[in-house]
Image 1 (spheres, rainbow, N blue to C red):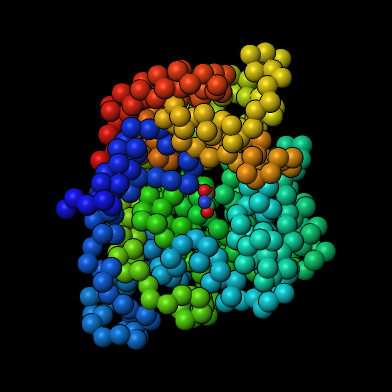
Image 2 (cartoon, protein in one colour):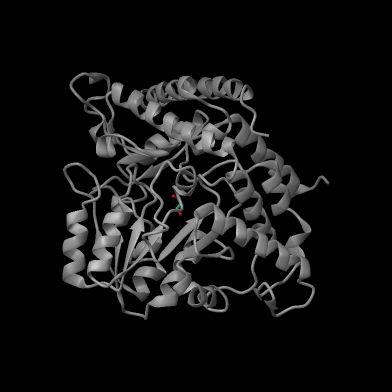
Length: 415
Ligand code: DSN
């Protein structure tokens, strides 16, 4: 079928195939996931849960949701799972509404330290409805400061602590935060949207046995369809389900739930574990290459799929090529886009620039690893990024590099 929108979908597919994607929260879903997402399941209304729907004709739908739940529980070794959240934000909202009242105090990682909007930012529903107190990374080493979490918890006696991040490159000690929560009679929600795939593969400690709630998206390292999920202890299962539907959502997106089940099946395979290992190897290799080029990596390295570069501190004494340059995240993001490399500008801890400008960029390896890039390729990409930063005003250079990257990408087809 050729019409305007299908032409544009083709155009977007070509963009994805011919450019390098370093956006840490994106990935390329398998053809099977795409097929389930684009299936006739999109036609069906199924408000409610398996066996308790508000519509007839849900016999097959029930089997699909039950199957997705069984796989999800097995994959994460959780007591209870809800696969209906339309997104990570909806998942977080459903947890908050299941246990908090407006005005309740919650501790969450500040956006500037790598947290997420829904972890209490004042312009987000979370910060508007609840009294969020932010915790930040240590200004010296840029690592989560567990002492500060303990002090703030003692001081504010939150009902809930939210752990997890969108831009943090180190292992998070969920067990330590759980102990602080328990000592203060607070509940713990961990948001593993970014690291879910690493958790499944055993490359990051799982929070499932130490947290009351675990939320995630399904489309980042997990490599499924866009969507969310929530895991909880058996104790909170019923409350949580009511908070998702009817509390904060209506009809579930059954095509997306089916695609989540397909992704869960894929995540059980040895190939998925190998993929996650390579994601981390690539991240570490690329990070080291940037360090060798004189860049300041936030927290001085990475343990996972992502790392941040503070462009304001790019220069060190061994690299005077970059010294004294006034570079911001937005300038680098735009120049890289012209050269066929996509990533996002990102605030760095205690950033003095606005979130629209930023002093940093965030680099992630989930997508490029899916298309088959290994250490050699990611080192090459680090050098390309470096060249673009140096020659960001040279339009001819950026155009030529875009063509070179297009040819390079043809060796690594996505679909
Ligand atoms: N927008 C996602 C990210 O890029 O990390 C978080 O929701």
